[in-house]
Length: 161
Image (cartoon, rainbow, N blue to C red; front, side, top):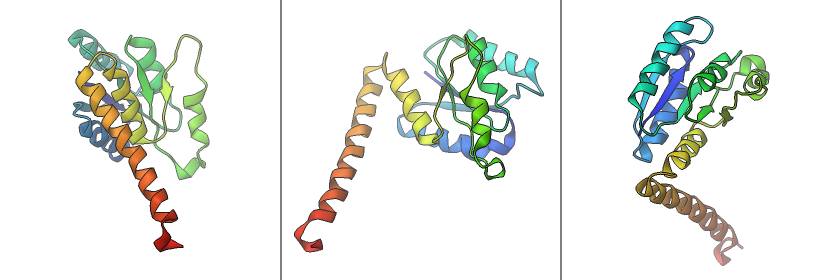
């Protein structure tokens, strides 16, 4: 089981590291790679072929902003699920996310903007074939629900009235 996190450029490393850290909390190994669909297509194909030959359970997460050809190119080349998690850019006011939303037919990466959310979706997908990971996901979701209940109780307790 592995999640390759493929960035379009090294400038996206902080964003990719957030995803890797969230995956690590589930016990899922991640490998961060750099391969641009625009600038180094042959390298991207070689990286993907490497993972495809390895086999095993995997979900790809792509990290590319502006014109996100990376997610579509990866999805078109592999049979495993692909999650696009582009970094937010103040420079374009968020408009660059549109390149991740509308892709050609036959290309269907998921889109999750939050790094921790992308990791959670990858964990849920991988948990379909892994009971131990499924229990970790369930524990995470339970803890998330408990935080909400605790916050509500803190606001509605007589001490806060």
